[in-house]
Image (cartoon, rainbow, N blue to C red):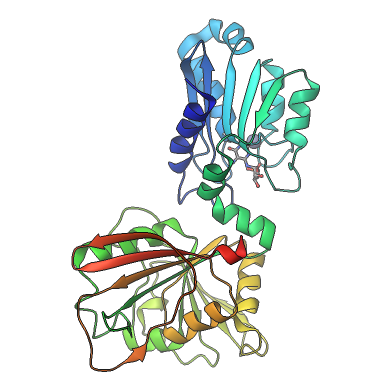
Length: 351
Ligand code: AOF
Ligand code: ZN
């Protein structure tokens, strides 16, 4: 099988870590001898073992004493450059050197400054044959959140909204009948499990009283972020319940009350989107899905601070309403989700 074939397998394994490894990247590793996979591993949880030690362990678990000799003849495939630093775990490049792996094939070079080529260098210095850049684009796409944080000092930003067939913006309040075809709602909840945080404005928090949890999909709830300059959202609203951590960006106070964190910001209206994005970066929030309202979404759009837009369009038309935001990106996918059409746009200008 080709190098691409095994890197693809690494990507499948890596994706199993989705939702559990942020702000680390998702990484998969496959160890191959004589065109047979002898061990597989992936980075399963933030702070725990990286993909490579898990794969090496799998070889030892299966082959016991023979493993050592097998590794000396094997190729290790990794979707991201093996790390070179002592972080929460020892360097993965050292592990390959220790076992004298014959050849290492890599997807992306790791842009993280403690690694960034140093892992490859360690391997090469030890006489290991190294190939990198295999399926570079696919690997990068899987870790687009990680790359955005490291290279742009901001989280990966996904805009999500629903609109009517004739272009009116629909929130999830009283009008939610049409957008929440059961499947669209489950999909939206799945998306929530995949991101670190979910963001809404005061208006949406007050009018819709949403929970912002991922009730209809197994996985973790994102951190709830609410923009509420003057602290006007009533404390009885769902966003203050204990289902998830909540952060309120405001101009009044910095404080922690149970699971609710208040973060004071100055002059929020100036460079609003930039300030919020940078604050999230400082808090190690690597990705955010913005679910409204139109005003918040328009601010991120006009600052060109967005990476993906996921838009449900219903088959219904309204007589009037708030015009939905206009999007200037590349259409990546068009999917029919029951009665709704889902369009996914990618912002190529930021790449
Ligand atoms: C790898 N294999 O599976 C992953 C890597 O804090 P630590 O020790 O977990 O290190 C985190 C950094 O290591 C992270 O920013 C990224 O550069 C790299 N992640 N490297 O060799 C892996 N997850
Ligand atoms: Zn590592």
